[in-house]
Amino acid sequence: MKYVNYILIIIGAFIAMYAKTGTDQNQYILIGGIVILILGVYRVSRNIPSRHNSENENNSENN
Image (cartoon, rainbow, N blue to C red; front, side, top):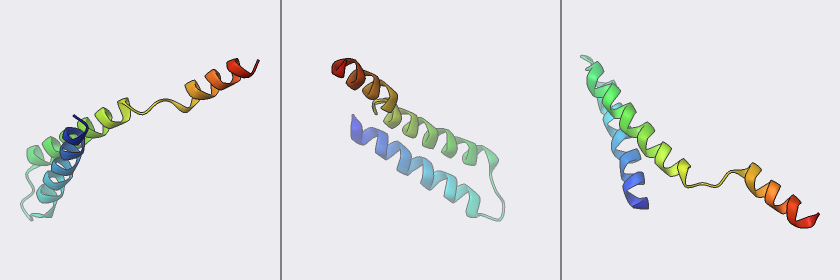
């Protein structure tokens, strides 16, 4: 499942760059690539624990 997120990021970045390079830019392809890119980044960041949560847990264990 983790690899799917990275593949979404790579595909989204590739599509966004491809849509941006042409002289006749297609806005819908660019928007679609950006949406796929952001979806992949969101899914990756959702699994990263918050720094503030781990600091609060460490402080409560020390007290």
